Length: 102
Image (cartoon, rainbow, N blue to C red):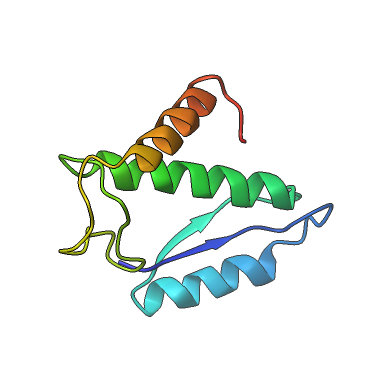
């Protein structure tokens, strides 16, 4: 399912437009995630990318060279037991367990 991630960024605390947009997205069948008001841009992007990458890799029985950008499935020609993906996964998992964003 496609996902929309939204927040009021920087010092902005005005969320009415964001929440209205998210309601429309939900009505159109999208999964929505609201991160809140006054969220630092770096924090939003880094944390979401980290968490989604960890989730993607943990959904499979093996660690692959690359994954399909929309479905998350490993393509037929993606090499299994891939080293750099494993290294990135370990690094992100350690940072997540320590509460670090990046």
